[in-house]
Amino acid sequence: MTSPSSVATIEIFGTEIPIIEYQGQRVITFAIIDKVHQRPEGTAKDRFRKNRKRFVEGKDFYLIDSSQKNAFHSFGISIPPRGLIILTKSGYLMLVKSLTDDLAWKVQRALVNHYFRNKPTADIRSRKVQQPLFHSLLLIKSG
Image (cartoon, rainbow, N blue to C red; front, side, top):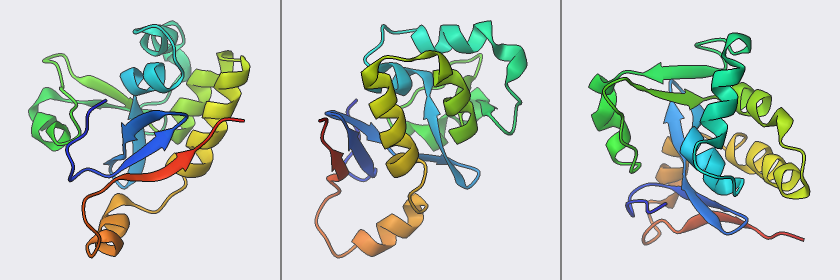
């Protein structure tokens, strides 16, 4: 995923992803989940659809209206007219329960410990102002 240089990113097992916050918490898209878990496009969305009744809107996920597309544009994320579902930490954890291979476990641990736990991006940006451009905030190596 190509992120504008003004957006904070994190690298998880060789995949750079933007740090996205919504309503004060870190969130993640289906496309990012597929990419970082090295799954075919549409896998995460499919699993969400199949288990939709188990997810609670406002707690596990948010449906972003297309009228908010400008708020996500800087992350390189397009919001289609029907809206975009983004997952919170709890939604992500519920979704990836069914991914049980070794990589899935490593990626899940890395995302939980380093993506969802870090301070809000605003705090990171204020500490990084003196440094040049944002590069990866964290590199987690497999192994």
